[in-house]
Image (cartoon, rainbow, N blue to C red; front, side, top):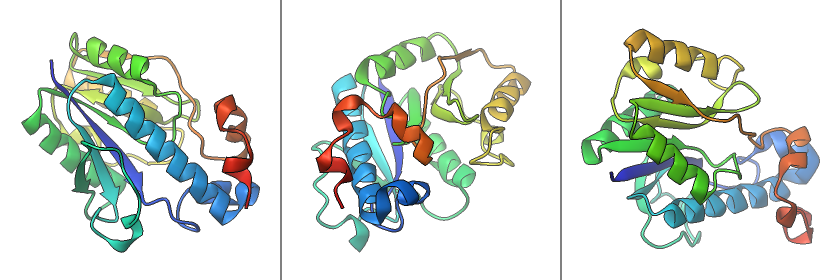
Length: 208
């Protein structure tokens, strides 16, 4: 079953990307890590070979912050648009499910969303109506859907430790069959850098 993967990402600009990591990496180092995570995520999505891969960008992908960034081939581009994160994700999810029978919504903060994990998530989603991988900080790294409801995105305190719990409760309220995958780690705070893949830790990433 064709699965659209929608990757939500900000432009990896110094001073704007991964700002909570600036105390550890500096503005340029944080931006370099953001670019590495973006490119790695897109490459993993393409390698998973599940269906279309879409970068839903902020600001819009035709804006100057994205100029000069060589994205992988065959990536569809879209604009996140206005509103809070929930409103932007809801629009993308509704549109994605009009285009493909199931979708995976992910960010770029989890380097462990590898092709095998994405394939397993899509396979599991084929047996239920929703699934997600929570993160150890209380959010989620991946949300898979075969049905749409705006309830999954409304009045959610984003960037808090309640996101996964509330999303799971909303899915249950809807009466959907769902699966919860293993807990993953996002790279958001300086302490999270311990969980970076070992091959990423080197001068190419951290030199300022």
